[in-house]
Image 1 (cartoon, rainbow, N blue to C red):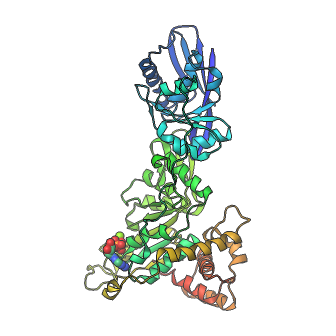
Image 2: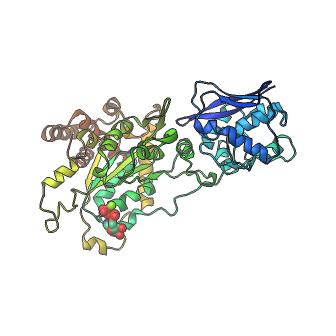
Image 3: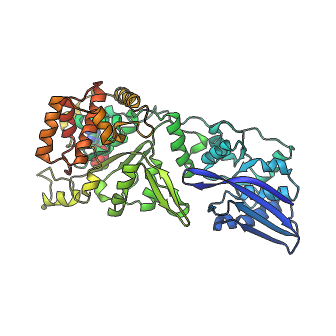
Length: 504
Ligand SMILES: Nc1ncnc2c1ncn2[C@@H]1O[C@H](COP(=O)(O)OP(=O)(O)O)[C@@H](O)[C@H]1O
Ligand SMILES: [Mg+2]
């Protein structure tokens, strides 16, 4: 008597199909679970025994063997309870074998047989859809999984309800996708930030070309306020991006009531957060903040205060757009193509530039403080801007600056120009992704622009990387203005955003 069913094992953002086989054989009563299960999976036996007991179903007095195949794929998490229980119920002929054999399911069982929500329903549904199988998941995860759309999603509240559905005693209706949450209507607006025109311009360029941005300025000058308004000027996620980002949020259990968001994520981990929280890893090799910010904004306030380890580890994911996280038996990869917005005080006390308030160690304290950001990391910031204290005149202004909605229109137009330019290239959507070769092709400045670039390279000693970064930013500035060719003024503005904090 053998029965089978399906579930998934997570490998980064991918859910891989796992076959659950259950065999009953003569011998001393025993329940064994094989196929590389971790501790939470092994404990499934106890939860299943209790849940069946609550339904007055006794386990047969025979050997029960459950195999999770492929055996070499590590199985982590508590979502294996439901598929194992279903395969077992089919083996003891309480459920029809063919009904169970076609299912992909996931869910943790409480001791009374209730189904407890699990993370990862969305990637599980994607895997079920590519195998063209029905997905069964806990009730709360149904609206999230139903976003996949091409397969039926059944979301029962308990093992009992699942049995009643599969035997036809009490069918459950298929789940409907949750509502689109967060339309962006109540995002904070850039208009609320008085003055700081140069910083706002940097924000606009950063948003248009996905250039990493570093803001340096004394406390209270509005850096956090500016950063928090970044999502309000970014275009909404494309359907493909929304699915990518939501998949990561699903794995982290962050999707509320199954509603997916078209807004770009804004993640702001505190500088004391652990390496695992920021980069990913730890128990269950969960995605970290940098992956939760995928396709959105990662805001790192008080940038030099993060541990050196965290800062140096960031360099590689910033370049490649993905991160490899180690776990017990393997490595998993999560995407993390974020826009990094960092803010820093100019020195430890924060008042380097203000003679009246600065500490006695000026200017050495500033060098020490910014020196915590290594040269190669500093080099990742295409845009660096000083954010001076706001003057009283500015604070007294009635809101007169451009609103987020106006800036968002310009950003969206610039992004459309880039998308058209790079339409044939899968890996490149914005100027920040463009390689040196692409820049040579698309960002060749006019003669005056080239002359200026040459002069700047000699004066400030631009590295090759620095040279390409100037071109990249200049390309974005030209895109914002709707210019075909990069002109001198575009180059000049791009260079002006490279000086604070130095390097390259
Ligand atoms: N440019 C500005 N326009 C309006 N209010 C400002 C501005 N800059 C600072 N503020 C006020 O000061 C507070 C602190 O600003 P914040 O963004 O936290 O500064 P920072 O991050 O640079 O230390 C804000 O909550 C806001 O009330
Ligand atoms: Mg701040």
